[in-house]
Length: 146
Image (cartoon, rainbow, N blue to C red; front, side, top):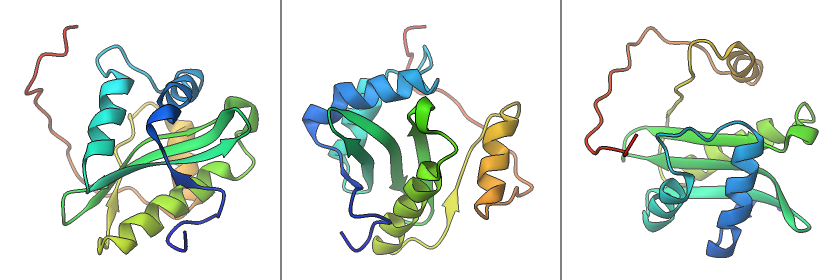
């Protein structure tokens, strides 16, 4: 547990998947073109990824999906229960993700934020992230059915 930011933060188990999807849905992270269960299952199968959660009773207070390609780390699906946002849980989850990456030998974390999501940009700036001059290009390799 020393690699994480809090003893309360653990790796997700299979039985946590419905609670994670519920949290992501309530936090507004789910998109029609990304099936959250598929994303979670895929990440949990990889030795280069993990889903960290902060369980609280029968729910999950916060989560983050973290992974790397052997060179750079990436974070997806940082979520905090909407009723708990603004209480520092997101920053603690990001610290846990950073520590997980450090434990994997990774030295840099990249983020992708939608350009119109100013609140999330501000959150990351407040915890020490800065914008870099990059263009992100993508191509879907598999039809998502939408």
